[in-house]
Every structure is written in C-alpha cells, then in structure tokens.
Image (cartoon, rainbow, N blue to C red; front, side, top):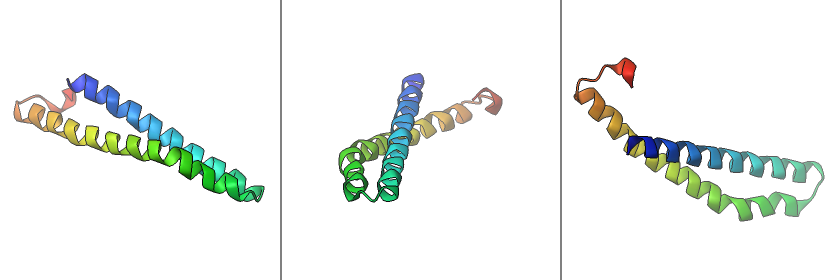
Length: 81
C-alpha cells in the first residue's frame, strides 16, 4: 500500500510541476510576443488539471506521513525509512 501511494505521489508531483512550468512558459512567450490570448488560454486549459494534480499530491503526502509515523512507532530505525 505504501509503495502504491509513493508512486501516485511522484506521478502527481511530476504532472503538476510540468503543467505549471508549461503554463508559465506559455504565458511568458505570450507576453514577449504581445499575444493576449497566449497569456489567457494556458490558464483556462491547463489549470484545472494542474490544480487537481497538486491536490492529489498533497493528499498522498498527507497519507504517507502516517506510514512514516507508524514505522517510527514500531521501532524501525530511521535510517531504514
């Protein structure tokens, strides 16, 4: 279960980081070439998916912290985590 959550966390992290970078880059190009639609379109098209991925990433991280604290409570050495 922990491994599945870790994989989901890393996938969600990669998705929202890449989409966030794409939005910023696309908007920067729109500002440089003075194209207002290039500034507004990325946030309309990609923001929902990026925000959803960041929410999922935060939820996975929240759940994973309980796995870490339960390992510490069970006496597992911190180097093994």
